[in-house]
Image 1 (cartoon, rainbow, N blue to C red):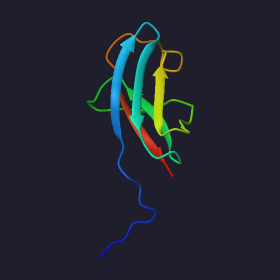
Image 2: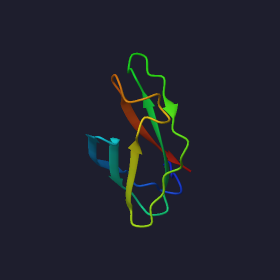
Image 3: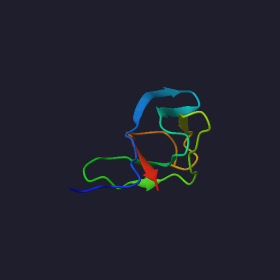
Image 4: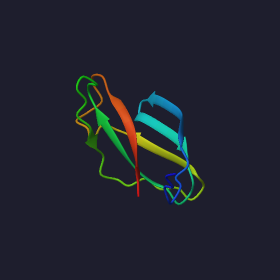
Length: 86
């Protein structure tokens, strides 16, 4: 069989909300995890653009806020994904 080490448990986005400050994502993952958020204005075809900050958490509750400063504003459609970093 195939053994992949180290094992990385799956994570789940628990909340996506838009408010006056922007779009806020929240998810749960092990505390030693690191993530990078990415966005695209279209899924056909997607062109994922990374945000510059590396996302960490000491509690296992991760969050990210897209305030529009790195993505050219908040107008128009927007899709997000999280990249789990090694």
